[in-house]
Image 1 (cartoon, rainbow, N blue to C red):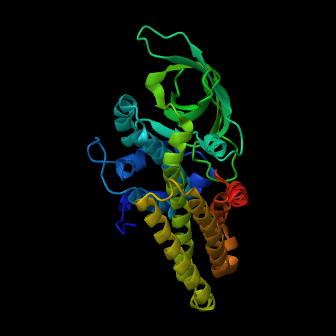
Image 2 (cartoon, rainbow, N blue to C red):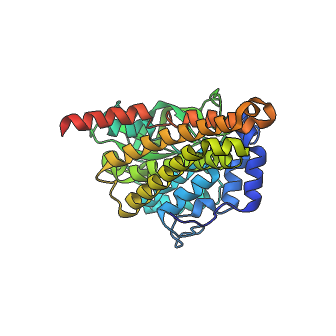
Image 3 (spheres, one colour):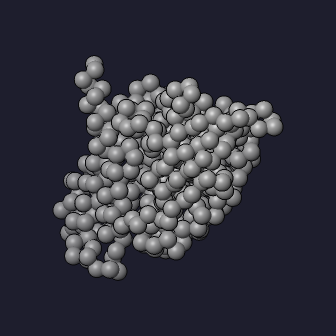
Length: 365
């Protein structure tokens, strides 16, 4: 993974200054996407042939998310959702959709939201698709057209100012699910109020309901959801692992800045966690670079589980290092990272879901 610093100093200062508010309120929610875009972060790992693309490898995008997460998991969570949607367009065979929307996504003019958590569970046989597509008469262009319906209870980066959300739909006529990019202003698309989260409240996380909204094939990201999801799952999960990397790094860095007596007492534990973090980071990067996780998702699942466990241990070590000071409001960054760490195991696919999938896989071997 690149050791380059992707987060400019002014953005780092803004994130550190507002990290508590981004976690506890939605007051600065509308600023996250524009600020990340202004720093060029969405273009990392995107070919320079696209306007706004900065080139680099997919692992550079993971590193950029990790660096943002070391300042604010709320901002990094938004970054992950937006960058994952960009990844979908980069892998989509629909060149027209990509050429139309990628520039606006890279510039932050519109938010990208990955509504494919339900679809990822469907791919792992954990739950059925919750969205349906019914064919309707073609429009004047002759393009195939569908009426879309269904609801998704939890999607991040549904910016009220404008969003595109990826969602998978079951086709009653063909039995082959597909994935559409659904625009926020399409008649029949409704966004709930922000969910009443205990943390990450500036992430524009809300429910989505679609009732009879009509789209044609020009909005289709992929006509075969299962094949497409298998191909993009390493990006979905790999980018998500950046959240854990950044949070674990920040917690261990805080331990290193603790009082001398605390540092000395916790030095062996901190060193062990740092070594494990380095090992898992290398494993993640090598697998993404070699594309081994496309066919062998199990190792990526195990890696995600291991990182969640490491984050919990690192933050617990920070709690020990901070002592009673960590309970003072003026030292609330420690408490915030405890809340952030508690989110890592439940973000889809959750650790329980991944362990369930690994257990099923083991029984079929």
